[in-house]
Structures are given as C-alpha cells and as structure tokens.
Length: 217
Length: 217
DNA sequence: ATATAACGGAACGTTCCGTTTCGTTCAAGA
DNA sequence: TCTTGAACGAAACGGAACGTTCCGTTATAT
Image (cartoon, rainbow over all chains, first blue to last red):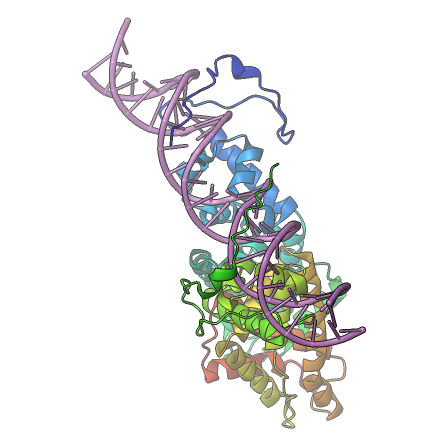
C-alpha cells in the first residue's frame, strides 16, 4: 500500500525529448491560470477529430486523444464526463451548416441534396465522425438519444424541399414531406454505412428520380 | 520473466460453487475426446446470442460469452479467430429465411416486406444482432466486407418484387429494381438504427405507397 | 496401451478507463 | 503586494477487460 512519493523534481525536465512524434511542436502547454485554457480544448478536439478520421471509432480512446493532444487525461475528464460526450462534441463541431436546396424543381433539389451530402461525407472527417456516432448509438443510450434528435431535426429541414414542391403544386397534397425526406436521407446513410460513397452522378440521378416520381401531382 | 508454475492440483476443484449465477445447470462440460464438443459450440452460440439481445454490442465480449456459456476462452478462440467472427456467426445463424413476397401487386409486396422486416427485427435477437453487425462494420474491415456482401445479396433478392412488377407491366421499364429495393431496405434500416421499429401500419403503408408510386407505368 | 485432441481453469502481459497526487503557472481578490 | 485558487501536464494508481498461453483432465481413435 506504500505509495511511491518519489516525485522527479520536474524542474529540470522541461526538455523531455518528444518520443511520441505525433505532435508538431515539442512544446508543452501549461496552465494559464484559474481558467480554462482554450488551446488545450482546441488541441483535444483537433486530436480527437484527426484520430476519428484516421483510425475510425475503434482507435478513438481517451488515452489516444490525450497522447496526441499532448494533454493530460485529467484535463479531458475535467471537461468531458466520458468518451461518448467527447465524441459527440466532435460531431457537433463537424456537422457544417447545410444549404437549403431550392431550385424550383423537386427532383433537382433531391439530387442536389444527395450529391452534396455524399460529397460532404466523402471529404474530411465528417463522414467518419457520423459513422462513429451511429455506431456508438447502437450501444450507448446517450448517443442514441442525440442521434435520434438530430435525425428528426435534419429530416424536418430536408422536408422543406418537398413542402415547397407541394406549395408550388408540383407534388400531390396527400404526401408526407418528412417521410419523403427520411427516405432520401436513409438512402444516403445506407451508402455511408456500407462504405459506398462513390456513387456516379447518373446513378444518383436515377435514385432521386425514382424516389421523387411517386410524389408528383 | 519467471513464469508461475504453481498449478493448483485441480483434482479436488471439481465442485467449485457456481458464483456467476448466469447458467442454469451447475454442471461443467468436459472434453468428449479428440473431437469437437457440439454442446460447447451450442452453449457458446446461445450465450453469445443472449448477450447480444440483452446487452447489445457493448456487452458482447469474449470474456462475457465464455462466462455465460461456462466455457473456457481458449475453447472459443479454438473455433473463432476473433470477436468479429463469432459475432458474424451468430448473425448468420439468426437471419432466418425470408419469404419472397408475390401478391401480384407491387405496393402490397413492398408493404409486406417492410412490415415483416420490422417485425422480424422487433422480436427476438435478430434486430439487435443486425445492429451490432452494422456497428461493428464501421470499424472492422472484415465485418464491413461481410455486411456489404450480405446487403448486395439481400437487395438482389428483394428486387424480385420490382422485377415481377416490371414483367407484369405494372411498373415502368426504365427503372432500376435493385435501386428500388435498396431504397426500401434503407428506409427500414434507418428505423432500426435509430431505434424506431414501432411504426404504425398506416405510416408504413404511406411509406410503401410513396416509394412505389413513382415506379408505376 | 498409447497418441491425439478438445475441454475448462488459471494466469499471463497489455490496453484502456477513470481517479488521484504532484509541481507549475497564472488571474483574481484581499 | 501577497495570498488564494483553479487549470494545466506528467505520472502513477487500481480495476476491468482484453487476447493469449500453459496446464491437467477427459475421452475417442488407433
């Protein structure tokens, strides 16, 4: 039970060689006083995002994030209660604002929606992060709740494409615009989860046409 | 490096009290000679399936399966190279044969497909197992490959609904039946992954109608 | 009788989690 | 000015679960 109190005086240890080789600058962050250090937060989020992009959800551990960010694990636990909440923070930070598509033609809007969404997932870490959240939501109730809320909100927004079509008289009045939006988004998500994001424009156009055609007046 | 060779003679340890309390019978399986023991395999698969159903993919570890099955971990590793392959075995074992829907009306078939699929996922462990496989596929390349192959095969089968409709002249000739099947299945999978399997028959009918309507001649 | 192989038990070393302790660095308040 | 207090990184902790390996036991097959 005897704890080891030998604390390496640490004064002379300022120039520890950077053995991990994952961070660019060899400098070590310090406290900036009795307040949160934005640099630390930034470094942690950057590291988390990079790890998610490179290793996927499997390699995403607090340990790994702390190593890469050159941060102490306590610093992470001070601001995020657990792994999932850190994951969700990265996710919130990643998901960019989405345009509302309004070309005046529903089928064009649907195609643009699919095209932009797949492209958005293809480039950068966004796709990988979203995959991670979905995977996490299959076992973690917190992530599941966030995913459901987000999906609901997104489908409502996407439904605007069809609501506008209905208002124009282009679509039938007895359709459910949210259901149509969900159909469209589910198709895209299916491709994301199966790793087939490279869809030709023509195939995407065919998908959009088939999904939209049944809604027309 | 000195390995600990103290092997507790183990002869008198035949009646170890059952502390885990997860298995019904307190008896311990033994080798049945120089061949595989079907009871062990069965117990392992049963335990794996039960854990998946109850705890989800998060609680699914070799350790937990071995405990519940009253099997040694080496026994599991003897027959399955890793966690994922055991997961996939359970998955293959779970997925029952699916009917081919052929009522003579595409919209009815599509509705039946959705209805049966969601019901199938709702009851039993099948839904949870499939969720697990999808989640696993987001980080494990082996699982990803299996998932993609399975999806492709299933969509081909489901496409039969639309191919028959085209043959009957009920659907247009320029549609892609596999794409339509994927749209249908993706909708269902979306609901599975988001935990909203309880869909009313009327909402399901609306979804089937909207998806199918655009394909009609 | 002997060889072979599957079985469960037990322990290995490793990784990660979440926590605690320690010395340092500042900002805010007395 | 000086003290207090909070956030920082580093290091180590106990605990859990991992995959792996050795072991003695069991029973079939030769």
